[in-house]
Amino acid sequence: MPALYVMIPAALLLVGVAVYIFFWAVDSGQYDDLEGPAHSILFDDQDPRHQAAVKPEERQADSAKEPPPRA
Image 1 (spheres, rainbow, N blue to C red):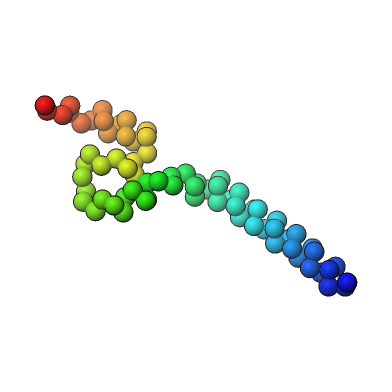
Image 2 (cartoon, rainbow, N blue to C red):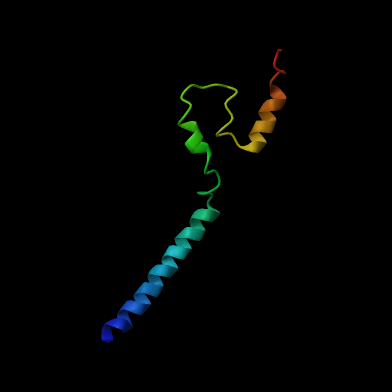
């Protein structure tokens, strides 16, 4: 029984630390782009048309610079 007086607060502290670390990771942007790295390992060449790991706002800026494709 005395062990419960130590183990329950220790478990609550551990859960609190885990929740804090999770919210820190979300706020710092660790989960912003989950698909880009998975797609980027499939393409090792530096194709300028490859857009898997490019953020949408950068994609719009790059498309404004490129000339239209020839038919």
